[in-house]
Structures are given as C-alpha cells and as structure tokens.
Amino acid sequence: MLSSTGQRGLLVYQLLTVMIPHGPPKPPDALQPLQQPTWLVVRNMHCRPLQSRELAPGTDLRAILQADTAERFASGWGCTDIGRACSDFFAARRGERMQIGIERYDPEGPGHQSHCELAPAAAQEARALKPHRPK
Image 1: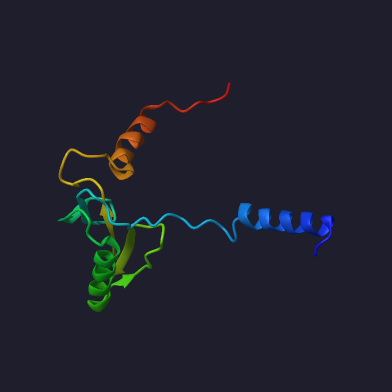
Image 2 (image 1 turned 90 degrees about the vertical axis):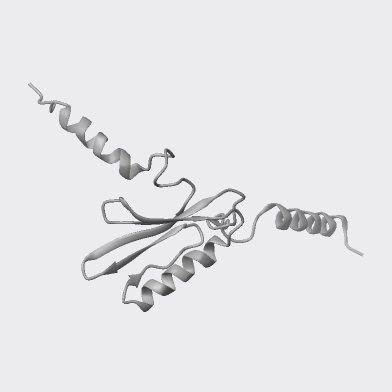
C-alpha cells in the first residue's frame, strides 16, 4: 500500500503523462483523400500551368503523387521528396525545373489566385511607388 505522498506522486505522474504529449505534434497529412475534386497540376519555373488532370473525390492523392514522382524519376528527372505536410514536389532536368502538385482549384477555371499569379501585380505596384529619399 502506498503512503498518501506516494499516492499523490502516482496521481501527478498519471496526470502529466495524459496532459503532456509525447514528442512534437505531427503535422496534418496534406494528401488525405478529400470529398471534392482536386487536380494534379504541373507548373513551370514561372508558376504557369503546363498540364492538369482532374482527380475524382476520394482519390488516394499520395499514391497519385508518388506514381508521378516514380514516372519522372524513371525518365531522367531529379525529384524532391514528398513530405507529410506537402502536397507537391519539384523535378529538374537539364536546367528545366517544374513543380508538380495536388491543387484544390482547377488551374484553367476561375478559382483561387495563387501567389504566383498575384506576384506580377504586386511587382508592378511596387515599381509605381516613388522611392522615399530622406531630406
């Protein structure tokens, strides 16, 4: 039988093991199957879509991306790894670089504007601003 101090110590230990997670939190899986259409999109170095293919809801997105990586690697492309928190990878060959990824919006349709599409407008606005010169 434990003393009251021992019982309190055991209770504190049990509470701490429940309350404090073990190890760093795991990032969410960016390639979980979704119940909406998604697209496998290939973009060039300038973020322009070169190819896209619509994927049905519920598709195993990680398997699609891994198969694409294997195909590109077999045809001589160098490919980056696909991380757990990533939904894309990069491929390079003879000075050409591409981004291949799963996207939630049709790149040909009126969907979400990516940062790549917004960048030229932001650069134009920045050029229009007159530089500030202290007097």
